Length: 297
Image 1: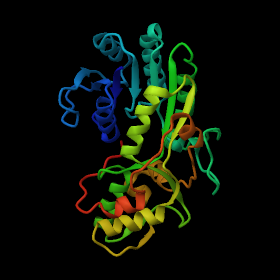
Image 2 (image 1 turned 30 degrees about the horizontal axis):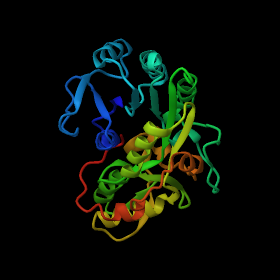
Image 3 (image 1 turned 90 degrees about the horizontal axis):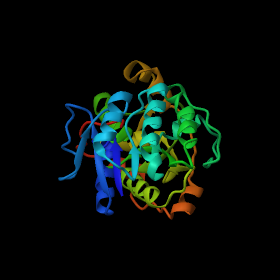
């Protein structure tokens, strides 16, 4: 399938592009003018554009030519920009009933209880992602004219990136592992390579209107991730609350880091045959010795 991938040069996107190419698909990378494409596999076709610029996006779609689908992984541009992008993608895909695979995230569910919730849980987004539930509805409303699918990844780790790698950097700076909120805060998590596998399966098998959860571990204690980050930073395996997190990363992101969730993906696994196999988050993070700069993408 010929697929336009937004966010293709980011932490998750670059892995997804490589995995799509390995699976025999033809990924095209939507890349902002002046951005580096060094993370992309050799030979990947690049289309210049920005998902947050509706006019430029439609020009980029025209340049790309007929598409079998769009895999949207770019960061949110805000509710209005995201809805405009989804509409532009749907308009381009409608003649061939192409795939619109849109990424949000589990933070759209808000806080949950200790028992894992599944794909039927109602959305209750926190401030950082307040527009995304509405955008999800907007995307899914394009089905069945397009094959609209929404993916909600958990907190992503692996390959020395994501929020866990940021915690390693903070541990080095603070000389102790840090976590936000109480000791019982838990995060749904997924390895970036398992998540990339899910995207390939969704491209090939997901039905129009599907809402998928990219979760390998439903509820990993954030304190344990922070302790593993301390180990990766060469420190004792200890963690303590990060009282000034809002001053360091901003209040909305600090709220997200302190959000306690337990989320699973039973329908996603059953429908697509997705079976994550990579190391769990705590083991993976503890081995991030020498990890470089982190990415929130």
